[in-house]
Length: 135
Image 1 (tube, rainbow, N blue to C red):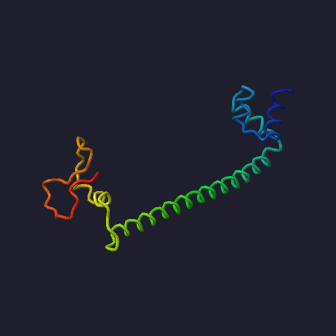
Image 2 (cartoon, rainbow, N blue to C red; image 1 turned 135 degrees about the vertical axis):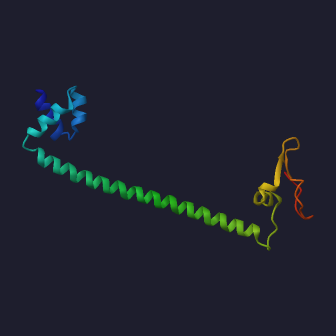
């Protein structure tokens, strides 16, 4: 089987791309393209491949949009959960824990590595009910 016959067989029967055919047969891309274009089936094959690529692209776009929407929905649900949790912690019906208070007022606390705890900045004037240390 000659190179021309191999090229035509791989392109029209196996539906390989010219680049892949060139690599497989160890010849130049331009030679492969030249042989393919001289065949009478070229325009029909090219049209079919364009249509297949359009369909494939459309499917991939739809799949990408679905994944993005799912990701956004998951993020939205996580945000709603966090908002409910924060609202509950800040509500006057519930006592806020020392850790939560420190989290909401992070700039007021400094970490003491010797004692392994957070301590309130001594420069601040705070009321008596504010936790001075948080473990």
